Every structure is written in C-alpha cells, then in structure tokens.
Amino acid sequence: MNAYVKQQQAALGAAPQQAEAWALTTAARRLSEAKGSGDSETILTAVRLNWRLWTIFQSNLADPDCGVPDEIRGNLLSLANFIDKRSVALLLDADPQKVDVLININRQIAAGLLGDARPDEAAQATAA
Image 1 (cartoon, helix red, strand yellow):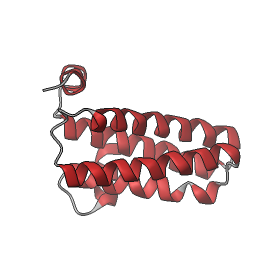
Image 2 (tube, one colour):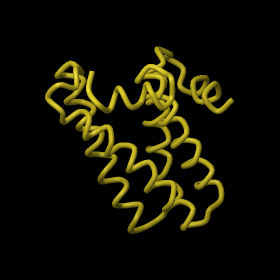
Image 3 (tube, helix red, strand yellow):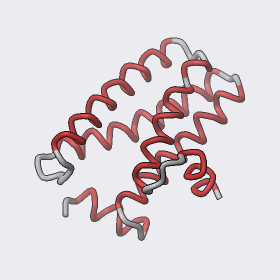
Image 4 (cartoon, helix red, strand yellow):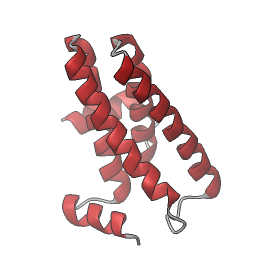
C-alpha cells in the first residue's frame, strides 16, 4: 500500500475507491454549481480544483507500484491528459458550456469506482 492510499484511509476512514469517488463527485458538483452561476471566476476556481484532483490521480498512476492494471492505468492517464487540455482551454476561456464534459467524466468515473452503472444516482448519494 503506497503513501497516498494510506493517507486516504487515515484521513477519510474509507477505502481509496470511495474516497476518490467522493472527491470526483464533489468536484463535479462544484463544477455544476459554477456553471450555473455563469460567473467566470467561480468557474475558474472550480476548474482549478478539479485539475488539482486529476493531477493527484496522475501522480498516483505514474507510480510503478500503484497496483492499477496496465490497461486501466493507460486509459486513465489518457483521460487525465484530456482533462489537462480541457482545463487549460477553460482557464483561457471560461465558457460554461465547456464544463459539462468535465462534470460527466467525474460522475462516470465516480460511478465506476462505487461499482454503480448509474452516475446520476452515485452523484446524488455522495451529495447527500
């Protein structure tokens, strides 16, 4: 078990997958609220938070001892690369319509981490 996993379990008292799902749905909720506000500074703040979260995931996935199967690891790193590019684009132009893809990705990954094929229900359960 690497330091990241140990820290998650100690801080949140949850399995790493549950903690990651919680973080992703929280970031998705903040992105959604920021989009709804229409305020570019609020959008930028939510995008930065989400980007930091994905940077943590990238760091963990880059660790040779992360334990994630190679195929899934490669797919998640490619997805993280997409998140990087979309985040930079949003930092240059905080277009609320471009936020939806980040929200959907976070909800889908969170649902997968929770073993739930319905991301909307996973997001609602985490928000409660």
